[in-house]
Length: 116
Length: 116
Image (tube, rainbow over the protein chains, first blue to last red):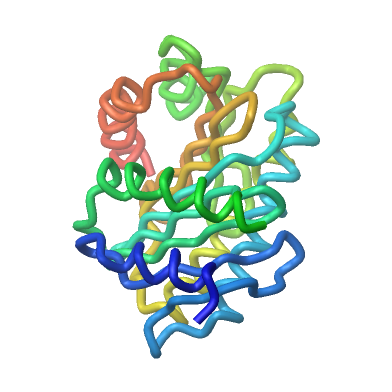
């Protein structure tokens, strides 16, 4: 298993986290630790849409570069976080605590940055 | 001024909030209290992209119906919140406190729901 996958797998130990994936800005899947019922291509497509929305924000609302995003739905949350030229996506239940995720996320982000 | 616009204008009193808009799911602008430098059509386009991303999440990741989203960029935040068949968008600075915004938001959401 690659070191990237190891780091993504480690995020699954957080209560409520289903899985994680690292997607390059143009949609290439760089690493994935997603449950079997999640298609990595669908996650990559979501990253593309979120980055498009953010690009409009940057261009027309003077919001600067994309940092991160969260989509909260009835049955889960999806977190998107920039790691260099990539987006780290975390899929979780509604109940998962953002504070705990963000804590582990910053460690994972640092580890990933040293590999990319 | 319409009652919807009044409610949107009231959100601007929150520290760091530049403005707000109410966008119908298919992109129609139902109300807007945005600063002059923000094009409501650009905000509507962003809502469409966020809802598309959320729809993929609903269909392929079994995440249920869209509730809300946040995009955080280098110079600002954009919040998207469901109000019946519409999305209330709030544009703020990076420094704006989400706790305070969410407090005022729930009052505004209730007021809007009674009008829609």
